Figure 1: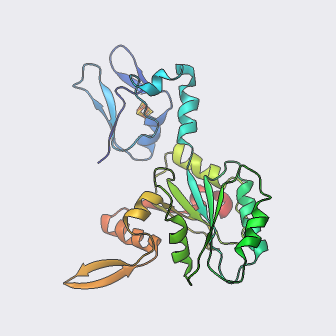
Figure 2 (figure 1 turned 120 degrees about the vertical axis):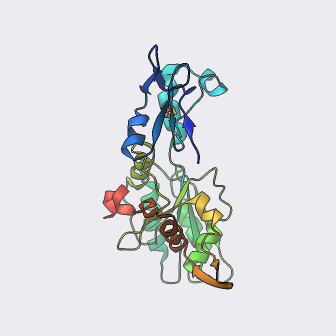
Length: 273
Ligand code: SF4
């Protein structure tokens, strides 16, 4: 299990005797979320160890701390932790250029922009050149990429192709919105707040009633083979358990007794309710 020690962290607060807290208030938030935090009492100056990853931990004796003054540490770490989200807008036969533009436009207007919007086009009815020319008018704040599929594909296959080049170190989660939907302006900011301020943990956010907003942790998506069929050996016979990534994660969470790691997207982003 990953653990984080506060001992050398620039944000750890100590009195003469022991650690008394965290300048970012994260210890109380971890405890509130049910994460175990213990005090290493046998140390000369007792400090806390968290049963999980604290993304804000920065060593006081390293290059990071030396690169700026302590009054900048909190702003700097918050900016480094900002949610790195890719959004996939899969375009199928029934979608029009106006549908796609409407959704991508709403992503451009996010109060916190996504890292990248990926648009796999898997029908022949829309000319990628026509979409490309429409997106050229978008502001520079939005990074977008068109993925033109030459072979017929399902929606999930198109999503897999669009996510193939994405490095999990550059993207923590991805979300999926279907064309024609206007993504609420604070969607990315709400997710960022839930993850970085409330320390909400999840592996997948299930879509709302309109099928919008599926959000998945990219590292896990990669490790379980995305939306490709999952094979499991049952009494010597191979069988497919699930294909869609959210179904695979549900099976995993059921087996591990961790269904709490599956949440509804509207729990974190109320405007999607
Ligand atoms: S930022 Fe994290 S590691 Fe650092 S003191 Fe606070 S809780 Fe501990």
